Length: 447
Ligand code: GLN
Picture (cartoon, rainbow, N blue to C red):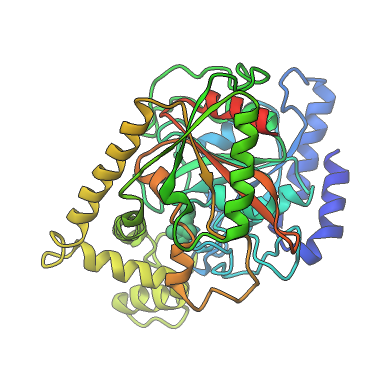
């Protein structure tokens, strides 16, 4: 299976460009030792997968798709990698992404442009675009991505697969390149809901190496599968069908909601009134945290150093000028500004206050409902090159995924059908904190 999968990647990745690099020798070696031991007790044993390139793998190049980390080989594994290795999973390599997970189309990668699995002229979404495309194209049955403002759910929507952002604190961030530490979560992208639950089973849990990891019991996430949605109370926020939502997206998602209702769920319209402030609050919060996290890339400690720097000052400035791409620089500048003495109260603090209002919006709805359902993204996947020159348009594409990160909640995207020109449309299910099992239950009924 490992060999066949690696061969298949060689045949299909010319068009897709999902993998930054495959690790054939290590994968085949791992497969051989599992074969020899005959140890297939774990459901994931011997099953190939791929990892987003911001997840550290010991001794294997991990770049976050940035030039500044070219050649960098981490000296330890991320906790999720260790857990998957313990489950005898086999990594086939590292998947393309937006540079440091900043973007929504995988076009800010320093290395290559990945294409959508359904149309090679369209973007795969991002920032986990390599993960989304690889799973949808059948290169791997599952991949891990990371989601700070939508980066698992949006590429899942754009490629017609299942992507889950777990509750903040559910999956260890240890060994994940920090983008915005209060928002980042690792999660699975799969072709079915059950697969997704099985992978979450393997990667979830408390980790003493991540101080924001939460020490609560990990249920069996497959426990509610097959139970259906009879009696489930579903809330549909009116703001999720407002301005800027493509009519085809709205129609397919509404049809999906009607299907849940036909299966026995009760559906009511609700309001999440602060939704429209989410994008602004997110881009300030995320940039501020990112500008601080990215200080470590100074040309000294990791990866790339400008070859012609003549003194220490130049090592910093030239390595960063040459090592970071435009989107990363934009966010470092925005975040540094938002945190500066004169701007802090007007920007960072305001964003934090809005974040609290958004959390309150969700709390009110979850007092009465089990699940919130709406679209994952305002539009299906667009053409390569179409939005990359217009950051504000790109940022607005995150309007429906961002609030979930700001509130730390779990969210899943599942396919709800296709647009007239054949592109997948994602339906998003948002759950209560640590209630991924209910999301899976409803998503599987929908499947
Ligand atoms: N598209 C969003 C951004 O560019 C989300 C990124 C993410 O979730 N990593 O910030």
